[in-house]
Image (cartoon, rainbow, N blue to C red; front, side, top):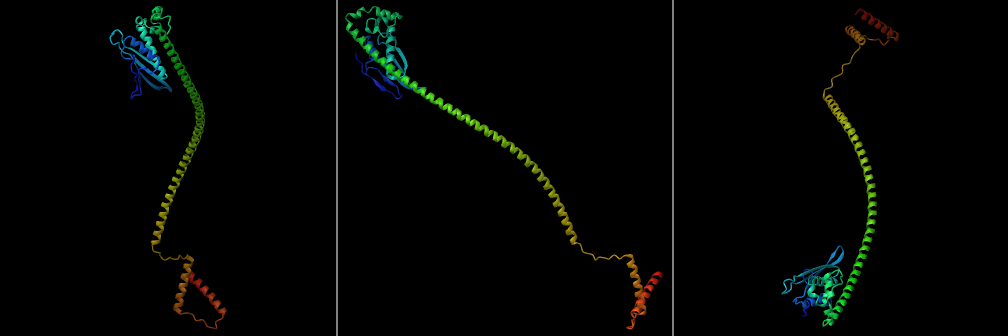
Length: 317
């Protein structure tokens, strides 16, 4: 019984399908399940994502509980691949293998029991293949047809895997080129960092030299400030002295000026007394009247007599 195809995307970006719209392992699985009276085909839930720069895909599928065989529980499969189309095929092939391993006796009567792979160490697969003589009777045509379909699907699956491996190889090469380019960039950045470190070291050395100069300048400034402070103190003292001198000058200028008394030596005082005595005598006898006929010699003798008089007068005194 053919089931309708169902394919859609949900709001979360998941791809839901029953895989019946192309020839592949999902359709072969459903045809085998329908022979065992399953009513609903398995649904596949696939999602694509990026992991560390690589495109990945995860597909989950469930073979539901058998509608009337309680001992046939659901079969859950989860497969991780690189593309959605081949990951769906891998999930269906894995489900066929699990179904055959869980029900070896039931599948031995059908061509699906010959698959999925040759495994000489698997007793279940040996049991199914050692007793397949009945398949060459009435089921020979169906067996050949199923085997052919499986071989064709297997070839198609291998082509998908080959394409996926080629894509993975291309992604790996791209990542290698990107990594090589990034390594080159890292080396260039390291060279730039080294150059910057050298420049920073030179600047640090210059800064240290400038700091030493600044410290020396600060020391000189401190010394000059001390000298300036000392000079300011001296200037302050000089200004105070100048103010005191100015005040003293002003005080002197405001005092009255007294008349000066001449200081007469002792000899001059005696002469003055003699002159005063003569003056008194002259004043008693009157002023001498000189005759116009008085000769110069008489005058000189008179003067001499006057000197003698003066000397005698002085002696008597």
